[in-house]
Length: 283
Image 1 (spheres, rainbow, N blue to C red):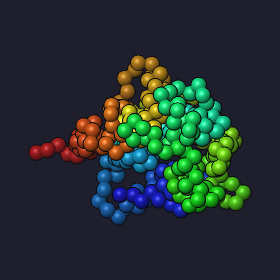
Image 2: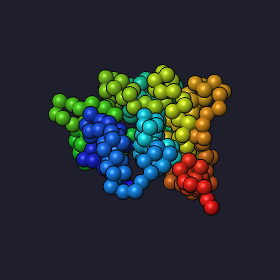
Image 3: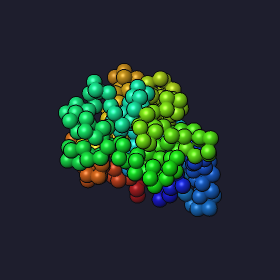
Image 4: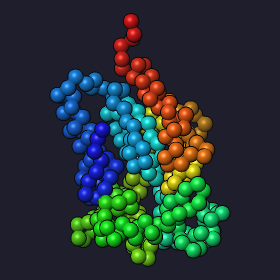
């Protein structure tokens, strides 16, 4: 499988100001070279994407802008696919990543925990266990100035610009949680849900994307998935899409979703796709 790691953490296979042109390098350099060296089927229908978590986001991001390269994507529990719910934070309206707005419906039912700890970042079994402050603070100790290579550092390296020191510009202050509005706005070009809402990406671009997430995802990633799903349904206006789908599985979290029947069926769906689109008829 492809190695997604860089000094800044997972690259998400996106063309980044900090990490470089990972998407273009894969689509325009590595794949053509593999097809030159080996007996591969040089057609998009034969190139399928499968990923989980950050890899799940990568599969969607590659499938949508490169339809001439990839024939379909199977994604589970992807990193935030709509930045109005970046985990639980609305990156565009929240002023602070550590403190949610008091009227935010996302924290309904866990208000006491939020008042004591701030915005949650991780839960298990329905109970919040780690805050954004704790997660970002730990990464800051490992690598100041957004250089730790952890999850939040990875996102800031992929989605944002460079700072004056040449490091990924900080979306949030690691000590106060204050959000840099200019940096937050620069993320819009990677906001899949926002790009669908604005019309910059047509809903048909998702016709080949299969996406499954648990409604109890440990990192609250289902919230962004549900926003993307609603935006696609709104733009389609009731029109049927392609073979792609988005499914939110009750009771499954970031790990247990992998054992859900919806995900266990991915392998057969991929085989069926190849048999229909690529392989010669059985004799």
